[in-house]
Structures are given as C-alpha cells and as structure tokens.
Image 1 (cartoon, helix red, strand yellow):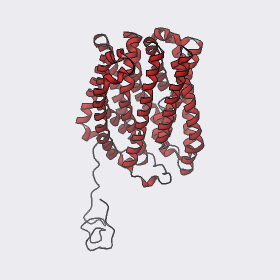
Image 2 (image 1 turned 180 degrees about the horizontal axis):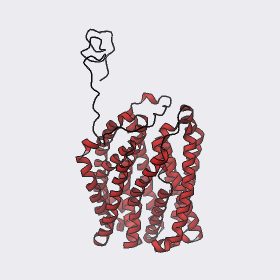
Image 3 (image 1 turned 45 degrees about the horizontal axis):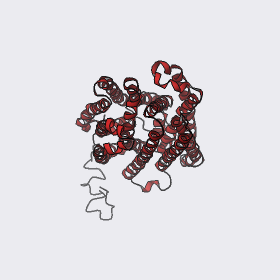
Image 4 (image 1 turned 135 degrees about the vertical axis):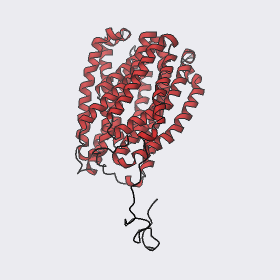
Length: 463
C-alpha cells in the first residue's frame, strides 16, 4: 500500500489567497464545515421527522422512509458515483470544469430516471408495501425525487471539489428548512403523500439556488484560474471501478430499511428509521472528512499520509466523544418522536453510535486507496462491508428485531476496523526522508551547506 501514485493529476491552480492556508489547516477546516453541514441537516431532519410523526401515522412514516430509502438507493445507482469523481478530479480540471460537471449531470439524470421507472415497474414483486408509489401523483413525485436527489449529490461533490464547503452547508440547510416548511403545509392540507412531495419541493429549491451559484460564479472562477489545465487522464476507467465500490457501500446503507420493512413491517421500520437518521450523522462526519482528504490529496499528493493520519487522530477523538454522548442521550432523543420510538429504538441507536467509531478507519482506508488509485483495495473493503452487514442483518433480524441491525453494523465494522488498525503502519506508512549524500550541497557536513557554521549568511532550512 505504500507504492507511489502512478501518474497523479497535476495540482490545480490555487485561487487567490488559497496559498496562505496551510494544507493541514485547509483539510480540517473544509472537513469541519462539511461535518457541520451534516449536523445542521441532521438537526433539521430530526425536526422534520418529529413533525412527520405528529401528522402521519407510524405505519405511514415507516412506508415513507422506506420509499425515500429506495429513492436514495436508486439515485446512488443512477448517478454512477460521479459525485466522488467530481471530488477527485475537479481540483485539477481547470478550464474543463464546466464540461466535466455537465457531462456528469446529464449521465446522472438519464440513468437515474431509467432506474426509478424500472423500480416502479417491479415494485409489487420486490416490496409490496411500496405499491402505493405506482399511483400517478406518487409515481411522478418518486421519479422526480430520485433524479433530483442524484443531482443534489453531484452538486455536493462539485462544491467539495471546488473547495466551497460553505455552500455545501448552505444548500443542505436550505433543503432541510424548506422540507420542514413544506411538510407543515402539506400536513395541514391532509395530503397523503406529503412526506414525499415535501422532498421534491425542497430539492427543486436547493437545486436552482445552488446551480445558479455554481455555473455563474464558482465554476467560471475555477476555469479562469486553470486555463492551461488538461482533462484528467483515465477518468472513465477510474469512474467505473470507483462506481463498483460505491455500489456496495450504498447497498449496505439503503437496503437495510427495505429488509426491515419486509421482515418486520412498517411500524418497526419507523422505529428503525429514526434511530438510523440520528446515528447516520456520525457516519457522515467520517465520510465528509474523507472527502476533504481526497480533495487535498488531488492538490498535494505528497501530504496524503500525513493528512490521513491527521484525520484519524482528530476525527477519532471527536467521533469517540460524539458516540459517547449519543449513547447517553439516546432515549431522550428518541422520545422526541414518541414513547414507542424510545422504547424500541434506544438499543439500536446505541449500537449504531458505537459502530461509527471503527467506521472512521474503514472510510480513511478507502479514501487513501482512492487517492492512490488503488481501486481494487477500495472495492474489496466496501464489498466486504456490504456482505457482512446484509448477511448479519438477515440472520439477526428475526432473532433480535431491529436491535439486530445495530449488532450487525457493530460486528461488521469491528471485523474490518481491527485488522486495518493492526496493519496501519503498512497501508499508511510514514514516507521515509530522502537520503542525504555526505558531499551533497545541502548536507549538514558540507562546507557549502546552507546550514553550515561557515556559511552564516545562508538561510536556515525549515524543519
């Protein structure tokens, strides 16, 4: 794992003033802003689901969450993991940024719409509880939500690659706020598909605002700064392999609600879903720090190992503290949705919070492999996670109920995280300093060395 990157992309030209921020400072700053975005979204998401549980029945909430999980899964499949491609290659795209982004948008819309329509055709066979999505209004809203969410994910990747994490925070806050407002209005009007329709309306607002900013300001600025840049090499090959790995991770995250719905019913799925919504914030924090790591590696590949170790130290401490807080506060948080959610979901939420800690190791290992273009390793890790999670969930759900999902995630993450921790010096080895020749002009023993006592006017080398 310590072999150098083959043909790394050239560093992207920095925006004005960017060179004044140290690499490590930018890495943590951007990661923190992206994580804050996840926290704001999750906080407003809790408010959203509190409102949903007060307006709609528990069974309706469970079915709606399963439908949104299906839309998320289909959007992830249809957007071909191009969001991560944008994160990886936009920093070096320069004058090709708009063309790269628009190609990704077009491919995502076409493929996502196709898979959403196909899902509606076969939904009576694979998830009869979601058959209501075939009704005309619900079907149009579902396809629109799926395609819109695919572009929403892509614009997050584009903003991250452009080093505009503040806009990621802003667009997610807009999406979450508008979603709450629309749900309140649709609930007052007693609209049956209000949860799904509120997502569609909020996505439309966020997409228009964010893409207006992107293609009028952020992308043109990137293109002006990189007039001499060339299109990143071997992009299609990278995207294909990275897409395969992302599918495994996506299936692990989004198929579980469908398993719970089919095995335990819509009411238990509602209890599971809201515990997952809260715990997923910790998983998102690790993902966002990894995205910042990939962007900085594209700008400065030589600091990849140091930056990855910095993420592990810094985020490990924060995630551990957050997980402990969540374990203690779990019953009170879930009681916001109702007594039943606290009774049935507390143990699940605590187990998922614990699982988020070893997940950091897995995320960093995958992102380091992606930055080095060692995609076979990244795909293998994510495939193993998917098989472990789904296999353990299928086995434990009939035995432990929804708490079995928490056990499955914790066991799977530990089975992957422990070997990664033990072998960390191998896959994240510190780079060795280059050997210094005794006769080298920069040797400390050379009479002409910049640090030689006989050369008092020479500048001192930085440590």
